[in-house]
Length: 123
Figure 1 (cartoon, helix red, strand yellow):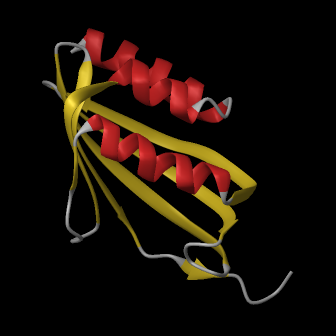
Figure 2 (cartoon, rainbow, N blue to C red):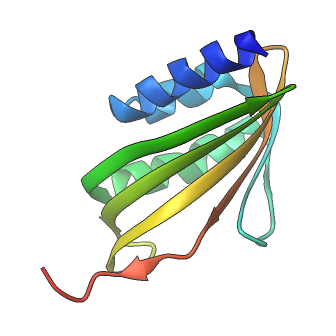
């Protein structure tokens, strides 16, 4: 379990430093399955890298805060508070997201994000 904790802490540090694409190459398996809420999963590291690069290229961040981490046997849950604008959603959003990550051999092979985006109406 401590190895998962060390890995998730290192991943979170890279995310906070804005090294999202580098982190994906370091911490995710080639057969990665990633999904948001109850949406269809994106399968494979290459497809997820492409999807994530589009998000990174079209997002302006106003705030990101790590709220909590929980680790079990080859499983982690990370809670983030986010404030950003991206062309994908069209509005500036603030919300809390929980990432549920399944680990194998020090890398994430399955990650699910749970959130409800809230448009910012004032500011």
